Amino acid sequence: MGIRVRSTLLDALEWVDYAFQPAGEAPPDDVAYGRQRHSATVVDDEANVPPKSCESDGIIGLGARPVAVYTADCL
Image (tube, rainbow, N blue to C red):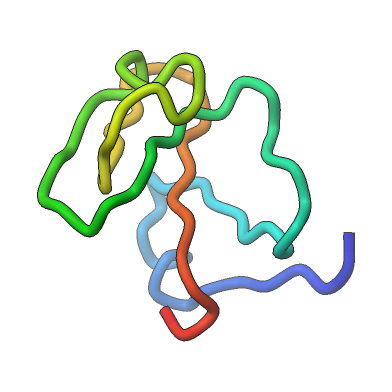
């Protein structure tokens, strides 16, 4: 992996463990993420197993499974 990018804002949230993944790199096998549609739909991580199994724009992680949200680089 190339340069490791950090966020001052996210670093201030001590309870958040995060990482930015380079475009085109495959996500981890056990990650939960939905089919994003610019909605207000939020689900828990179990609802997105397997990945993209439902439409959601927010995911709440209830256990140890990592969750992902895809964003543009202009976030």
